[in-house]
Image 1 (spheres, rainbow, N blue to C red):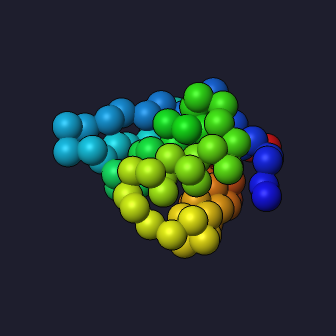
Image 2 (cartoon, rainbow, N blue to C red; image 1 turned 90 degrees about the vertical axis):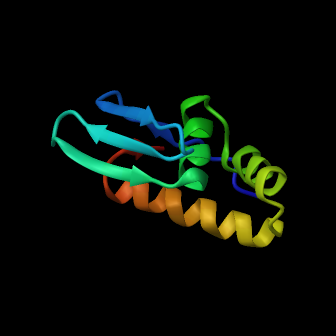
Length: 89
């Protein structure tokens, strides 16, 4: 059970589009990151201060995937966001 909270950095701006996708912009580096519908759900959870378990529950509820699969996907995405310096723990 992972209870660590990752927090979006202040310089990251998220824009959501009608199709359920979004874009993150790092105002310091001027880099853009495209988010699919699931990644946007994860990002919004991080913005709300939810921990990994809570975000995994939302993904399972929204997309009817197995909890193990959802956890792997969420943890991998959060690790990528950390590697891009978009969030910190």
